[in-house]
Length: 235
Length: 225
Image 1: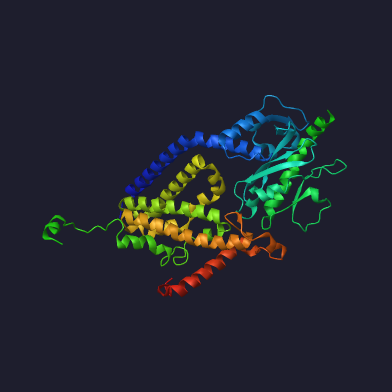
Image 2: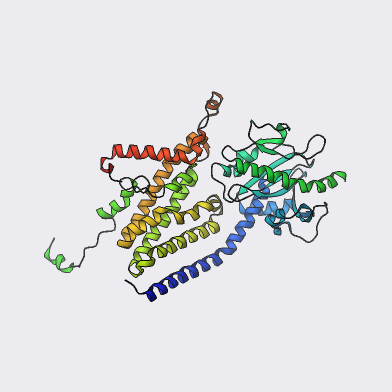
């Protein structure tokens, strides 16, 4: 039997040793991790306009040359001197709409047509979900969508981050013919909604809460941008 | 054996070779006779949770094998110094330490993979197999056999995970590793994916059938667990 003093010292020592090693590991690897996260954000933004590449340099050069970052407010005015990538979406979504800063990314493809990429942030079943949806310059047709999540169940809610789910969004419309906002509903095939096929995609069986979260995220996430889009349309 | 060598080799205790029969048995036993899931009944919870698809199951198996092997090794190295009353806390610190290192390394060098398994990596800490093997094996054995025991148990766990996930992904989604297996015409003729396969109880049924088959084939196991 070891003495009490030995037990205390042993516990303290092993905690200290592991803590120091972990601290060094975390600090040493941090620059790599931050670079990875930045690259991941850029990749996600480009995925929303169906630009699919795994190559680091390709992504960075495409992002640098084709994406314009912009921040607007709820009144549809551009906010100068704020970096779109520095905005914490989690905090912005919690604010009332009038006080939000809304990041917007504009992608100019080879055909010179701009695509407007809206970042989204919402709740899934187990944690946050987020994504980007891109609109064509009629501000109505969806060009592409990309979603990701922190901890949804693989095979169920986590399917939102898979290609087949995201591909459903292509060509959907967010506005009704009378120019009122509808969004794209994520519902099961048999669900009855007053809107036509161009306003709905098939939700995930077994992932109802994540599907509902995606639905709400789209509706609440896109709406604040309409003021700005209407301004652009009037130009 | 000549008298000369016996004179030179008069150790107190004879050491086993690196891959002696006993050590090989330590490595291969958990694959069948002493499988962590179907015989020791450890780690069942994660076997239900991560087996809806084959890919996460494989990566989870690799992660658990690494952590179990190195936790066993470290604990076997320091076992004599660990105070008995806090031994489980010490074991837990070592396991959590290793899992955090694995997580950090994945985030730095394999970001895509780490995004896919963020939750699972953390879950290895609470996997009963790791703690179970530390208590049952590493606390009483030399480092090398302990290391082999960790690898063996990780592989035995992975084997079950992969078998279960193959059934679940194939019948639940009609795919394997994401590739479509069930052809489109089957669906147009009325074939439907089995929704039950996507839910945790399906894993319990498959593991149950596996245990049945394993005991039918391997009479040694009857009335053992």
